[in-house]
Amino acid sequence: MADKARVHVFLSGRVQGVAYRYFAGKWADSLNVTGWVRNLRDGRVEVLAEGDRPDVEGFLERLRDGPRLARIDGVEIEWEEYTGEFAAFEVAFSGG
Image (tube, rainbow, N blue to C red; front, side, top):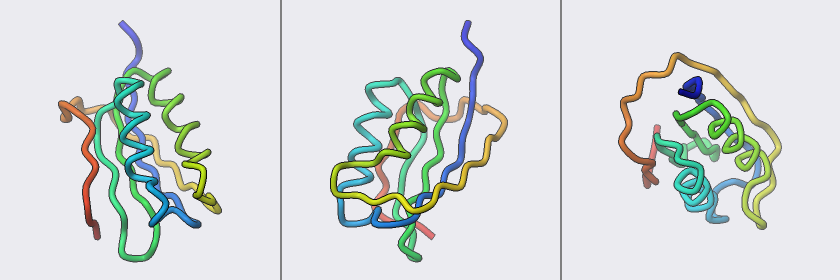
């Protein structure tokens, strides 16, 4: 069994209005990562993701790249304790 991981990520730059959440959802699904992604009122995107460590690390690399129209200026990463609380990856429409 693979080591499980959970990561909480805040991305800044041109990350809203460029299909970033749908990009994240596509990669989460393809890598079997669960959790969610949402836009924040301050212009950042927030992601909480869990899964097998290699899959979460691969997902994090994709998040750093972003979709074609995005520009990633900053990435804040917090590794947290895996909980297994999510059944799927959700694209949320709003956030804090």
